[in-house]
Amino acid sequence: IVQYEKAFEIKWTSFLSTMRAAACGYKANDQQAYRFFLDKAFELSWSGSKNVFDNSEEFRFLDGSDFENQVNILYLEGAEEAGVNVKLMTELQNIQKSDQEQRRHMREYSEKYGWQSAPMDSLWKIQSYSDSVNSVRVIEIIKEYGYPGKSLVGEQTASAAFLVIQHADLD
Image (cartoon, rainbow, N blue to C red):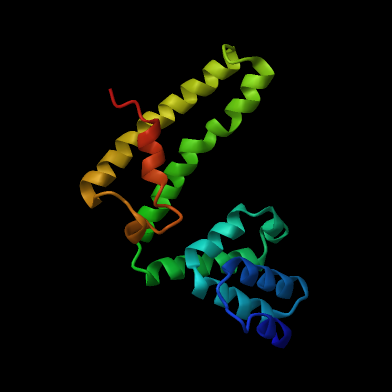
């Protein structure tokens, strides 16, 4: 820990670097270092730390580990401490995942089968259904809570409603 603390003496602002230090401590079986740096990363940014863990390939070796469990615990604790509506945040994260589920495959399918193909038609039918279900729920959420921005659902989830509205057929 001492060497890492010296490295961060100038200014401790990077939750990504701190997450990397935590991962190194975990890999080295240094429980004290791993927990110290993981706690520090989430102190710097609970949302940003979770986001880099979830979306950075370099952390995939930690999937299913105690490290990942601690990330999830610290994320929920950070959200609660920030006054975020955790239940709504989780629901919108699931909606956002659903919004992107089929879209992730569209380029691959269009290149493999062609844009005017049966597999693309099937993919679009599934996505259109998902879009309609998601837009109905997001409209209900907006009516009940107002727009679900970062103070309500956290920085990482604040764009979920926008994505759904952007893809909605509002005619």
